[in-house]
Image 1 (spheres, protein in one colour):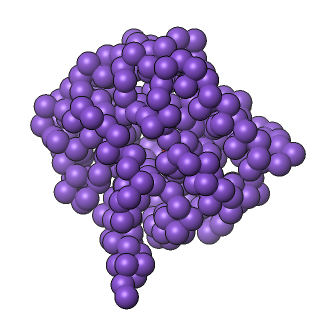
Image 2 (image 1 turned 180 degrees about the vertical axis):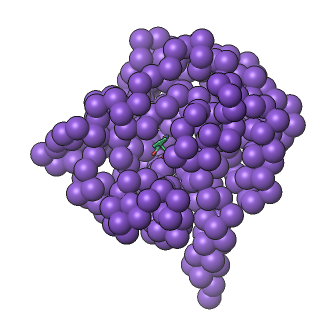
Image 3 (image 1 turned 120 degrees about the horizontal axis):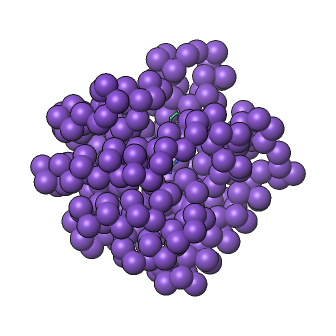
Length: 281
Ligand code: 7PM
């Protein structure tokens, strides 16, 4: 896949579903299975990806950085070792577009060479050299808002008006990208649920989703299994599937274009039902 504007086309009858392929030792999201005895297990990654594609994933997000609250960043060479061979193996086998979840310029460039179709950056291209690297790849980019950094972001998140501050940040990053030669039609925005936000902040942002969609760029959201859902339901990660599917539907109704999820099968079913109801007359 090399002309990527279709990825962000706004005329899909339902949001695209992005399936998470997390190549870290994190147990948060099945990742542990893809990372055995201290290194990525490419065979497991390939069969995991095949399963997500079979379940209806429109795009896969391949990541090797732990962005979990409290996590420390892994080194560049470690991230390359986690992500690039896996991405290359997936690109060889599958037609589904692959997104690379990274903030690191070298990873962006290598991923693009190995066939990545999109860059998903939780730092919104703020790392030194990231904006130039992303521009060079000519790939579409998801710009996500985060207050602080993963290691400390949940300590004391603070906003006067979370929706307008996140909106202003994203609008500023869009301008920076355009100035660096990244065309507007290659950009998507993401309010970054859980990234330096309390439950109250997350709820305000969720209610503001129609406003983000009105900024005229595709909106991506990641809500799957997050603490926000755990807090609403008082449930651990393993028991957040139904809540995650419910909130994916609600996000779809608020105009988002892409939803990043761990539970692809259930989310795709729910979104198909919603699309059928909305197109029924
Ligand atoms: C542990 C806790 C591991 C949380 C991973 C996470 C987003 C993302 C992530 C998001 C975009 C997760 C997060 N979340 N990229 N990457 N938007 N664009 O829930 O919300 O998987 S990592």
